[in-house]
Length: 271
Length: 341
Image (cartoon, rainbow over all chains, first blue to last red; front, side, top):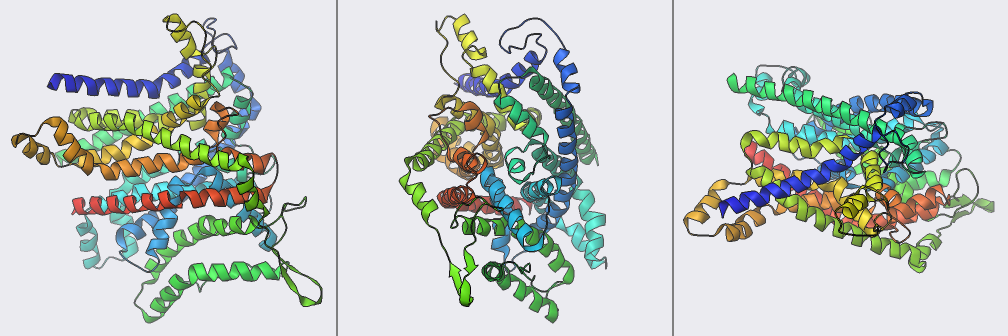
């Protein structure tokens, strides 16, 4: 009975992980395929990587996406820390319900609606105050900041509410200013959440096609926009090569993060 | 602390200035007036007010107000101009202000079967995908929570890892798998299960697979969170009292994991209803979903008012699930805080 139970749980896990990983593995395998046809194996080749590195359109889009992602990640960590602090520490205040609604709604709001509403907002602002002029990097960054702040807030808030408040209270009792307490005590304690939030916002921004398509203007194409237009035309081995590179970077980053977290956990247990 | 923000000045169109200004004051007024009074009386600290105001104002300006703009434009008429819609309020001669509210866009949604078919389709496909996610995600989350302690973190990491690689590219991967001469058909033919390749891509099946695949982590993570927080001693007590494992699961584990089930289902269902990328890349002419309709109205037909009306109608459809999700979110926050104490 017991053995049967653990066997069925194991097979569910095996099926689930296969479902999650077979598509990614198939992308990687076919990125080394000689043939343009993704379904026919014609021998090992790295030529698609060479072509990818000479594709100026993809490279410049990748550069724009990286710039936006870094700006977005840094900005949403600042906004998300403030919002997380409000939710975790400030207790009840007037407008808290409105505040939580504005924070959690972007987590589930369909992207087409966020994209359309932000674009119409930018157009309206443009009519009233003449800003934001041309749509492009600035408007994409603002749009990304708005929805990634929600995710970062959730990460930071949950860390803040699990944290031992007595250290903060002790520092306040000893006469430290709230701002000093935040930077000297709170920030080091929640540092892992800040890093996780930064990385999360970075990926969300790098990944977004729909919202960026709405709020972008002519001439500003992010990496997902270029990938999308090439994918619509059919399967392309260059995109497989790009996917392989992304998967490698992400895997290495996650392994490093996992290793660091593991070591910190060990230190904490030893201390 | 700044006074209640002044609405952006609008010399060009004083009429809509008043409307937006009124909504703006209505949105902000009640909180900020209280805040400013508190500051003046010294009951609210300036630092706290600033910490609250910055993210609050940001979200109001770029998340709250844009919905009002969408609502406004959904009542206007498409024209070939810059911007491509008519203003609601105009000054006619002799100082008469004219308010034109155009209900045509909403009438179109009701009358043209394309739109409400797309709505029904979206809700149906999202609901089926949510149930499928639950059926696959629940046993996975359960198995992970029952795994050896040192295995749990790596197993969870493996659930999250695909989420960190590009969503677009992962959906694209399924094109190669589901194509007529794609991986899955080749494997099935090789196994001798079928003679002719099955038409899998551009069907409802491929859209469902795409949604389940993309949103599975969003189902597993909240489920795991509630399952791993569960008090094991309840199950032990049930077993001691002679309860069978199957019954213990149905009467103890399942009800206690309901917050996770609700949070996970909402995290899958709500975005899936408005999904664009998956029906666009994997779907066909029979799998029209509302996100794609909105996209086409906006980008191909350049009809911003109809696109806005579609957005408003979709939001109305999703208000109940979104509110439910927020309640579940608040409850789980409260529980986490209680556990921390």
